[in-house]
Amino acid sequence: MTRVLLFTGKGGVGKTTLAAATAAQLAADGRKALVVSTDPAHSLGDALGVPLGGQPSEVDSGLYAAQIDPRGLVDDAWRDLRGHLRTILAGAGVDELDAEELTVLPGVEELLALAEVHRLATTGPWETVVVDCGPTAETLRLLALPEAFAGYLERLFPTHRRVVRGLLAGVAGTATVEKWDATADALGRLAEHLDLLRALLADQTTTTVRLVLTPERVVAAETRRTLTALALQGIRVDGVVANRLVPDPGSAEGPSATWLRTRRGEQDAVLAELRQSAELTGMGDVRVVDHRAAEPVGVQALLDVAAELYRGEDPLRGVEASAAPLLEVSGGGKGTEAEYLLRIVLPLGDDVALDLARVGDELAVTVDGRRKLVALPSLLRRCVVTGAEMDETGLAVSFRPDPNLWMR
Image (tube, rainbow, N blue to C red; front, side, top):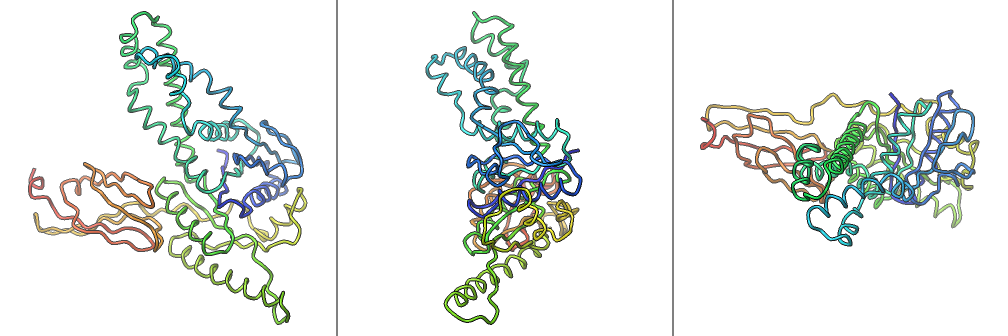
């Protein structure tokens, strides 16, 4: 199975350089690697010092690169499905102009870019695909799209074939059965493809995210929120890289040395907090890369960056997938006087906005506007929530039996 490693971070922190450096080092170690960018900024070719297209090209021995063009994918891959969706809407009585507008769905470009990453990861000769993702907010939206689209599709067309065919053929009696069959088949293929994308992202043994930041408080705070958001989506972060650490001037004197000493002191303080947080959340060590006077461009310059970044270690060595369960239930007692505690393992910062709500047999956990539905263990489905506490490692939710349900 091809290993997929996604780099993301706040815009301007150097994730493209570090992604390209990682792929260059893998190739130099004798492992075929593809580095591919989904970032609309198109800076991967600039880092490698070569022009790139949508199809992978060999930049150096064993090192391949490509720049995904989401707009082109929309024009090619989305055209047929849009036609099928227009057929559905027209059959439901939506006029042609409105149908055209409704089929321009938000997020399609990002979804197709992720689908192209999946295609490249499963068809090429490379052992590892390194993905230079867009800035953090775009990446979080990108990684959430397969589940969101799958949910929408399931609610709209539950059986993807029989219901769609029967319902739509009945709505538009003048249409041929073959036309509805083609529409149902297209929706079925989309559902299958979304399932493959979700499986790719959820496989924590092959797909991981590496977070890149500069050691600044604002950037570090966003990184902690990103870690929480990815954990909510079930996506594993296997490491953090602090880029552009300024030199330590030592005992040198003068305005420049004073500026560097102050700046380095601030960065060291942020790094200390990050390392403490990483230890508490199981993130392991935080790798560090110094700020360079000259921008690294080209394979050799990127290998120099990789040498500092990995220091002779395997670039794919990150934090191992945790064997700890996401949910842990403890407590007990007699009858309706029992008390239970549900522990939800989730990295949380001090400044997160947290909300909990009971939705049927699920607990809706919302962190900074991002929601995750957690299926409650069968024991707790007959209980009511009595309280909740949080710390950096997760949530502890208290339950007591609901007298109206407990004896059923």
